[in-house]
Amino acid sequence: MKKLSIVLAAISISFASCIKVNIDNSQDGSDTGGGTYNTKQAEIVATKVITGVINDGENVDLPKGKYTLKGYVYVNGRATLKFAPGTIIISDSVNKGALIIEQNSRLFAEGTATEPIIFTTGKAANTRKPGDWGGIVLLGNAPTNRSTPPIIEGGINATYGGSVAGDNSGILKYVRIEFAGIAADPNSEINGLTLGGVGSGTTIDYVQVSYGNDDAYEFFGGTVRAKHLIAFATADDDFDFDFGYTGLLQFGVALRDPLFVDGGDAGNGIESDNDGSGSTATPYTRPVISNFTWCGPNNASGTLSNHNYNMRWRRATRFELRNSILSGYMKGGFSMESAETAQAYKDGNAIFMDNLVHAVASAYRTSGGAETVMTGAEVKTKAESEGNATYSSADAIGLTNPFALTAPNFLPKAGSPALSGGNFPGGTNTFFTTTTYRGAFGTENWMNGWTSFTPFSNAY
Image (cartoon, rainbow, N blue to C red; front, side, top):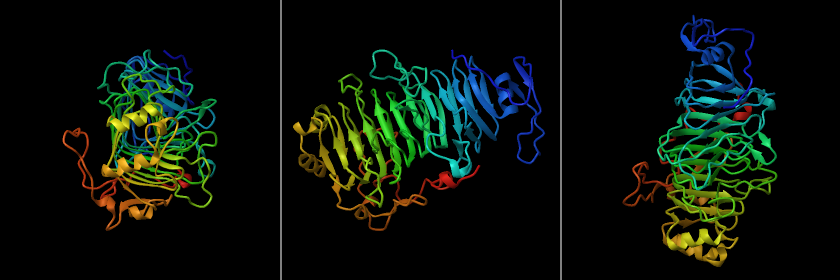
């Protein structure tokens, strides 16, 4: 159990196991309050500050409001933390916050399309920047390919992983995570949303990560399934997979800001490793992905040099990617960077089918030993024989306005090749929604109402 100090703002309360308190939770004074709370819940509702540890079976159910996340907050000991739709959680600007849901505990952040739940910086709109706070970390008991439970990155003293593939860490739905990515240790930033050993019983749906200082989403092992994910203006990788992740993902968007990227690393749409040494530990990292749309800088004026590849399959990873759009990444589209990865693709143990492919340079490339198995030209030949189409310009894919940072529109225009060609072969997992289109959108925009593409100007 973590030992962290608990801070109360402007009150001093002596608690029994439960207490009835009258607190105005409204914005206009109309709420007469009242209710029975456990001690931790009463403290948070009274102070509007979330700090310290929520543990030992405490179930904290917070009404709609605005709360401050202060320091690293751990939820453990089979506790739960629940936020009501429309709630805003801002990080303290001095004791920068992070929310860590440990194994056997759960987070319930279930907003709606009209009332999303927003995790963001506490700084004023004109001073906000990536890395203003930590991010959200979910840790579960699902399998990894590590022989002993690993400790999650980011200066967080907590482990993850196990044998429960269907483990449940809660619900994130209609959630925005903005300006996360504080560097707790050198070169060890917290991602916008980190998922360590998270199981398939967890619900992740309609989540946007914006202006994160590290990865938008990182999956360390686990089996979690997710839909409707947005990575907007990430510094490092939009989606990062490691340590035996074997989950399913559908309907995702990545949009890069040409003028923002990690200065020390490089920004990719996907970076995927079996592990850091490229071992053959099992289960292999093998995400199964369908209906994603990636939009890189597309050689916009002033594009920074560290913008990198659309997908970077390396270190013995495997993959299955279908029905998706790759466009506008600077140095490569479909890139394989280890002999083991390329061999898996050549042998059919990794799949890349029915995608629309564009890159500013090298739509298909191999390096790092992969070129001894297949050249870039051979990859292109195989890819185009398996339903993939290659384009010399992003415009040829025919999306409406995909590179507009403040008001992107990823829907296909009339006549776009993205409107057809969706392919879901027999035996496709029932998690996947069958579509006739390729990419994240057909004729309906599931981003309406709950997303924001102008976070620098938002004031809460």
